[in-house]
Image (cartoon, rainbow, N blue to C red; front, side, top):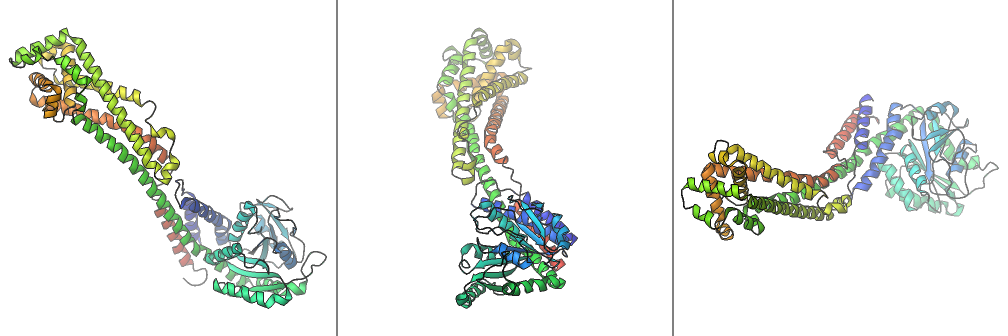
Length: 567
């Protein structure tokens, strides 16, 4: 018993801890079934397993107006459950037991979510517990709400109570026995393994044989042909509203024998308990499938965001390779910075003269360098903002096309974060300062840095930044030569004169990689607006596997226990 109880408790924790927050076709049904299973574990399976010898609970259920309360009253020979004429009857369910069995039902181990009361109540969350000395010990009746009540709470409570039954006494009438709702619940009870008995009430004498035969045929078709069937004719009630003893005698005697036979009661309890345990497997398998669907949906949404922002990273890398940033304002400011006349002529002179002219030009003309720095910053910020906007739009469209993603979207996600422009500006400025620091560190032993001080560092740094925007660290393509009018070659020659050929390539590569790293982090922050929203739904990893394992452990323990005498 202990192993099975532990396995059931673990299964309950697994079911209760599995959520279905993403809008998927199976989510709503899985949530409903999960709640129902946890309720059944709490209401019936765990407390019944702890006390197999507790009194047998007969839940009396059926359609509206079938006469359930009158039947219960008649079986215990006392008006313990009020039979309402108006529908729906709004009152708490009534549990009737022998006085000796009252402590078990009052303790609240069975159906712990219902508050016990001794008086009639209109609170559906209350359970009125009354005693009836005429009812034999070991057996109790629970008068449940109508299974087809127009009140949603009544229908849910009826289903909950039926799931806690050791034996379900289904009551219907000659006029209602073919209704769809009762048969759906009867099929559910059969699949769950609940022991069932049926009462066909208020049957006209002239049609009794025909109706009983038809009902029996319906039971046979649904594999319920072995359930006891009691046919009660139309009859007048006595002064207390009870069915005459001779009319109800067959049913009364059947329950009397059950109450008197502890072995028979134990067999019913074990059969229903074992059937309920067996039914957990398929139900939990459905939950596991739904949980897996949630996990797949979450991965699909995460992948769509990754693709959108990975495309953004690639666009950034392409933008640094294809020369697009060397055009327009940047090109004009670069040409202004290096000079298109005298400066290019000095490239034909020896390197020492070129170095001095470069420092002198930088020392006397700081403004063009500043203009170039601003142009570079503007181009980079524009590129980053465009990439962030495109990535956000792509991720938004991808989520919008997915049912789970569409439900998580907020209109603001379609655009970059409000502070993206400021963060992009800061990123580019920080990168430019980092490049200047890199140049300063690399040229610490170079004479030009010592002679030119800040101007030399700034000039060399700007040249390195220009180098970042070409595909091969300043070995220009035909397009770059045409667009730059030879200025890229000029920058390369100047830098080679200062640092050396290999150092230039290293500096440009380091600067490019650092810029891509910073841009990647910026895009990651933008992508997090989506991924954080996805993470906030609280999906666990591999919830389906955890559910399947918990259900398998229950089945193993159930088989070992052999409640019905066979493993």
